[in-house]
Amino acid sequence: MIDELADGEARNLLTIGQLADYAGVTIKAVRHYHERGLLPEPSRDGSGYRRYGARHAVRLIKIKTLAEAGVPLARVRELLAADPAAFTEAIGEVERDVRDHIDKLHRTLDRIARLRSGDRLFVSEQVADYLDRLRALGVSERSVHLERDLWIMMQALSPQTADGWLTDKLDALDDPEFQDIYRDYDTAYGWSPDDPRLPELARRSRRWYDSRHPAAETGVDSDPEIVALAAAAAAAASPAWARLGQLTRQVDGPL
Image (cartoon, rainbow, N blue to C red; front, side, top):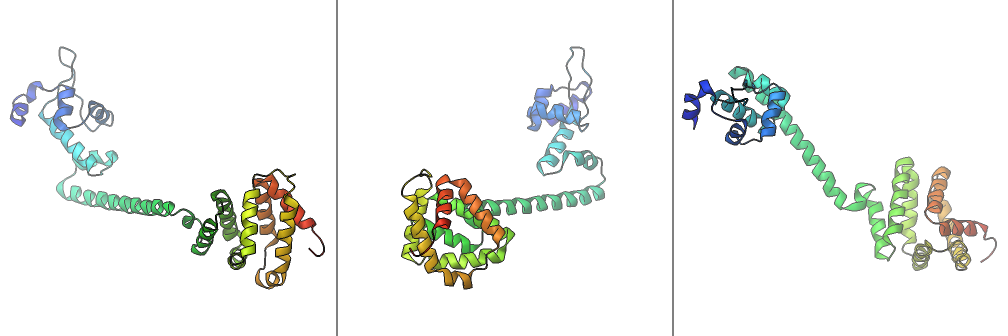
C-alpha cells in the first residue's frame, strides 16, 4: 500500500474516507486536524473531490500516534516540526504531564473508593463508628444521615464541642434506656406535631437527661451557637421533633 501511495503521490490517490480508514481514524478527526492546521488540506480535483497522497497519510499517522500517546493537540504541530533533540525534550515534558495526570486519577479513584465507605469520607473514624452503632441499634438510615450532617457541621465549626459530644453520646449509647428513647425519637420523625404520644416521650427524655445532668455538666462544654444550629436543623427536619424539643424544655419539676 505504501508503494502504491508513493507511486501515486503526484496525483493523490486517496479520498478522505480512504485516508481515514488507512490511518485508523474517523473522517471527523481528519477534518478536525484540518481545522487545527495540523494536516494540510489538498485542493479539490476536477471532479470537486479532495484527494490525499502518501505525505498526508504519513503525517496523519504521526498526528494520531502523538495524540494517542497523550500529547495535547496544541503541541503536536511543534513536535512534528522539531529536530530530534527538541523532540526528545518535548516528549519528556509530555511524559511528565501524563504521569501527573495519572497521579491525579489515582487520587480521584482513592476518593471514589472512600465514597463507597459512606460516612468515613466526611467525618472522623470515631464518629463513623458511632453512626454504625446507631445502625446496629435499628435506627433508620434517614436519622443516621441527619446525625451525620450535624457531626460534619460540628467538626468543622467547633471540633472541641464535637469531641465532647461524641464522648457523651458514646457513653449514652451504653444505656438501654437511652437506646429505647433514641429509637422512639426515630419513630416519631413522621408523627403529627399534635400526636398524643409526644408529651410522654418528652417527659421520658427530660427524666433521662436530668438523671445524667451532673455528668453532662462536667463532661461536655457545649458551644451555644452549635447547640442552636443543631436544634434548628432537627426542628427543620421534622415538625414532630420540633414539638418534642418544645415539650422537653417545658417540663419542670420532678418527673
